[in-house]
Image 1 (cartoon, rainbow, N blue to C red):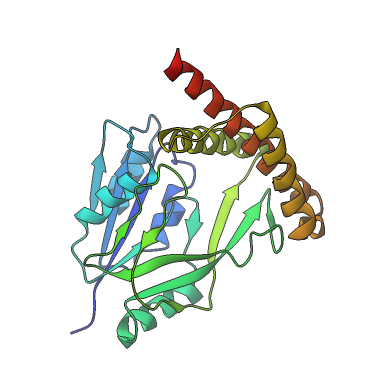
Image 2: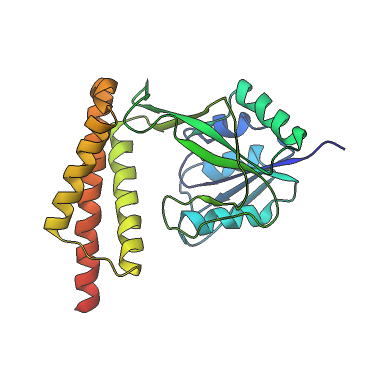
Length: 252
């Protein structure tokens, strides 16, 4: 009997691109969408394509929310994707071959990100391996509020074909996601008892810019590389200033 596959996805207000993402994974035996309170047509679009759509009234963070979606999966294998990612034909065929082979219980794949319409091959963004395909069982997502990852104890095989990632389409997307991640990261650091402030923020922001633009050769991505480095640096600055504010609020 051929192995079966569940695709899981979490989202909020992604009506402008969700249909394309879900259409690309219709080859799966089951598609599950967990929405965190969209105010656009996201839920209606999801219900027109997905098998299971759940709307939650809270936001526990990326890791816990993905575990909610994972708990709804019923098939042998799980493929986790985001609403701004596309599984093209070549990756689809490789995924089906991988789960049919039975050689491993988890697979990672390179993720090719586009920024403002340009594929990013430097800046530390490529190949950006992500573990997204795994046998359902004890495997879970970390409880991180942001930058969650699959927790899997065992050998992981690497696929060749990339997962296409249209991360930022406009500068508003860049700024919005940067602020979202900065706040989530600040909250996570606050829970761990870390400290922030302008001196720490300045050091973190400067080293982040140099790492992305120089050490990781972001300058080769031209204007997009500059945007990546600048956004990463400003996001790091914002993270540690928000952290300082959270610490002040607690002590006050």
